[in-house]
Image 1 (tube, rainbow, N blue to C red):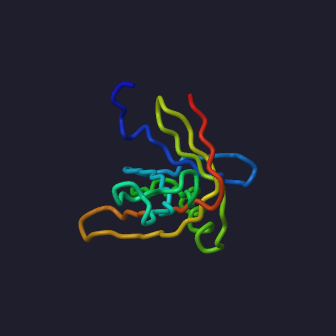
Image 2 (cartoon, rainbow, N blue to C red):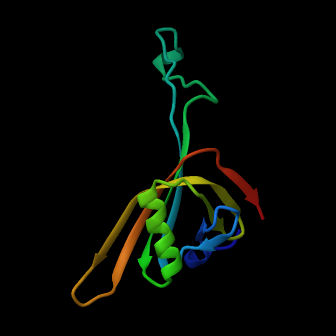
Length: 137
């Protein structure tokens, strides 16, 4: 796989609840992270006293985050509505030449900031709220 342009990593949100995904406008930086909790099954009989983990167990999760500037009132308004209403819409993360990650996420943080001589900006963070699907390109 060749080097990828960071701006091509897109976060999209289901805008209407029926699968109409739209890119969250104005994002300059995006990130998705996957996590898996471990279950320690180490005992006094563990070889060399090395930790042992139970394979296939534990809780898996994903987080999405992004930051940027205001560009599109429709996606900004929808993100605010989702946060304040506690909705859990579907999101997509498009990773160029890799695939699309899709699933339900809850917006866990929505931050706004601005400086005296700069643009207003925002940061958004989301946590997975169900099974995540991955479709390769």
